[in-house]
Image (cartoon, rainbow, N blue to C red; front, side, top):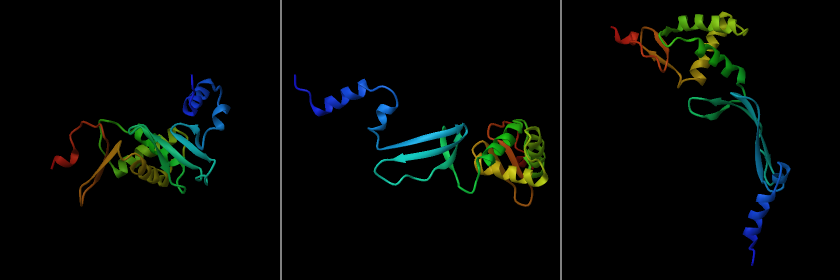
Amino acid sequence: MLITQEKKEQMICRSARGGSAFAGWMDSGVKLSGKKPNITLFYEARNAREPDQHLAYFDFERGYFKVVDAQDSPDEVEIARVVASAMSKQKFYTRQELELVARQALKENELASGERAARYAVSYVQKYLGERVKSHNVPGKNTWYYLADNEMKRPWSED
C-alpha cells in the first residue's frame, strides 16, 4: 500500500499528544487571557510581525468579542454592566434618574460613585451596551433610557 504525503500528515495529527505537539505546526496563534467578559488578546506569529496585544470584552447579546480602544479600559465596560443590571424592565429613565441609579449601583459595587462617575457611567452604558440599553430623544424635552426588553408604555407616546 502506497501512503501519500497528505495521508502521512493526517496520520501524524492523529498520533500527536499534548499542546506542545501543535506548536511546531502552527504559523500563528491567539492567546486569550483574563476573566470573561474582559480579556486581553495576545498574538504569536512565526513568519510575520505580530499584532499588538489589546483588550476586548465579550458581548453576550451578540455572542462575540469586541475590541476595546487603547484609551478605554475594561473598567468602563464593567461599569456599564453594573449600571445596566441595576435598571428595571418596568421603568423608563430620564438622564438624571439614570445617573441616580448609576450612583447607587456603583456604590453597592464599591466603585467610584460620585456625580461625575455617574455621568460617565451613563455614557459608558450608551457606548458599550447600545443593543441592551436603548435611548429615545424627544427634541426640546427629555431623553429616555430603557432596557431593550422593556414592555411598558413609552412615555414619549403619551402626549
